[in-house]
Image (cartoon, rainbow, N blue to C red; front, side, top):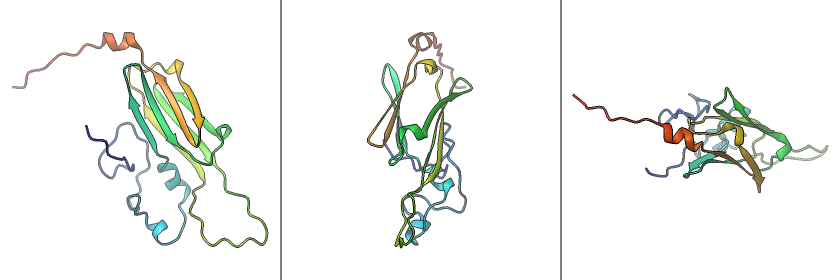
Length: 158
């Protein structure tokens, strides 16, 4: 398996773990048209561009979400329907002071949300979260019993 960055949006194929918004008029990051033209991104784009890495080892699944500038009080981690991990929150816009002249606004703000369907061996009731230096880390332990009970058999191709 190669380690390639996932730019989301379903442009390069279907990702069953992603709930990114598909923008038929958008262009793939980092060649975002609005940034090239000096504009800012809207809330939907900011939501779809919350970068999350997901890797696993023998004992757990580990999600790392980049959410710089967001306080941990403004982030929610939830489990929906028993097996869908939802990471959401809001990054607020910096307070504008009367008389300030803004020359350029590139930082995104607004709501963000990502959902991931957890595999059968995930122990959703034992999830742990930490946040350090703008990175949310969500650790989902694996259920060893569910992993052992997995019954896989080969099927001959005729």
